[in-house]
Length: 301
Length: 301
Image (cartoon, rainbow over all chains, first blue to last red; front, side, top):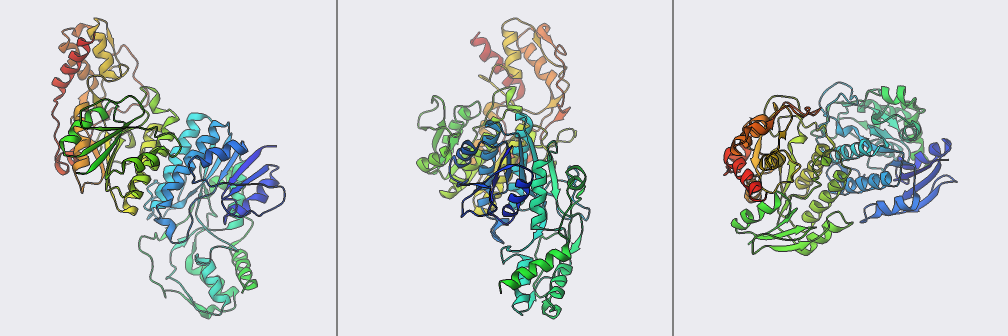
């Protein structure tokens, strides 16, 4: 039985990744700076990855053969520009160096669609679309890939880099798009959004997490892999679906908020590597996933 | 009087940077993991920047307003692929984070021509030539730039990134091109080299160091700045000049060694930012510099 260490295990994605990893027959070790929770059989570690030497001590304690590194700074709104991104580059490089030094075999890390150059209408494709991140978050994630992927090549372990696009699901931070719209609708209040003409690529958080688990298990698949549906959907259609699912399409106020500067018109993945090389398929169609997310907020209203 | 902290201060470039920094009227603090030396008036600190928390402690001790970060792994031959590059990304990010947190105003870091995409014949120009490093060293340097330049933008301090091309000078590691040829010639032994058709951009190490000192003093100039002559010279011409300066052109055996794979035919800088915006000019023409380097080895033979 191989041992996998999961960082960010209490985060939005991480908490959905533990069961699919256990389903692969792995010995799941989870780390978080916060309170623990999750399915039985998981061994929990509390560690601060941002403390000096923290990642190295954690790897020494757990001695994992596999690594799924999801922890990062994720405060909605702030994460695009927060200086904390630099701290996470430092922590992530230390973590992967320690993992390699301890004989780790395969690491999977979370990247982002914000590494790609924005502004083209073509689907973002691994190894083809230029990597010209325009945000600090995107630059820090991409820097982490440059260093850790190179280290994997030099030190002879496997590293796959899952580029996350857009996601949603129950229990997401209420400041995020789908959560904020769902909460407004459930409360019978107007859901004010931008024009919503942008095309995006959405996955349910449980699908994102199961894709990462599949990546952990996909020995031999290395390098960047888009973690996405490959389907383009307009933000306004996502919002409209929520309005219909709530039975209150009248509450949706598209265009009530100004569009954000610097946002690309299209940000959609080529998802063939994930589908064909990893052999993964999503389990939550967008309509069902949105309806379930709305129901989750209704239960808590 | 502003205080500048210089890392790598006993290194090949660093030891030439201390006097020009002092000439700017700065209070020069130098750090090295090795023995100290250098001009009077410099305050020395011994620190291991690769130790956990090492960069943060150093910044706390020195509290510099200016930073010149030259330290990096530089073992000839090995540095292109060595895992130590990742350790230096981590240390460099920690150093700049601590510098910013302590109120630092302006940082200058050492980048490399290996950040640029190789293979075009055009001069490498800042902000124009694509950044697609093909070596692990180049990727780690570029990752450091992505993170630290972004941090400077977010945290509101100045950061200039000097991209070094090729350099030579007295007391260089004997495994490097100019040193190894000079030593062979001085010893009356054949100097065996590759075909040497590649075009490169060479600067004397004292010029590289004075350019970095000028960058420290060039408040307002930020972002990437090529540290180079802007002059293309064939490696074979460098070697031939050394042969003539030694009075032994017969010892030069061009083409005795196979060309290295993956080496670009042309790697020459556009040096206009350094000349026009920083207002710097080299003091050591190539012919004089090579002759002086040969003389240095002759004195030690």
